Amino acid sequence: MENKDLLQSELTVVGSEITFEGILTVSNEMHLYGKIIGEIRCNPGSLLVLKTGSLVEGKIIGDQIIVDGFVKGHIEASGRIWITSAGKLVGSLKTTSLQIDPGAVFEAKVEM
Image 1 (cartoon, rainbow, N blue to C red):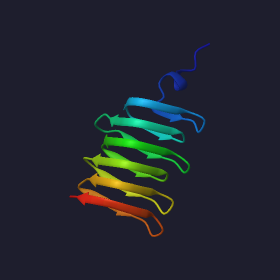
Image 2: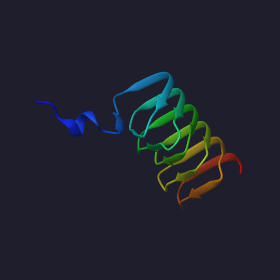
Image 3: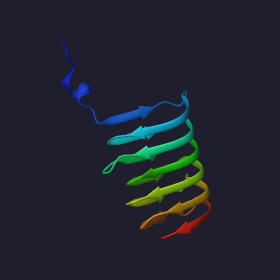
Image 4: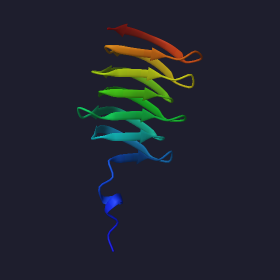
């Protein structure tokens, strides 16, 4: 018996025990708990959520990006970047909309 909800799911979850090196392309929505070394490319209309404990070393390009983990590198969003109180960014970013919550670690060059 097929589970149609599972087959049609638009959410991808990368677990905390996963380390990925290279270029990752994301469609729809992804929640990252693990570690990515390289580049994350999100398709138009996508949402990337970097959860507490996650680490990205490299470049992120997307629409909507929520940083609740740690990014060391460059983030570029055509939509909004939100760095939560638990989030950390060391590097640079380019966006049209930026939200930084109190308590976030933010050491970055900004282009808006």
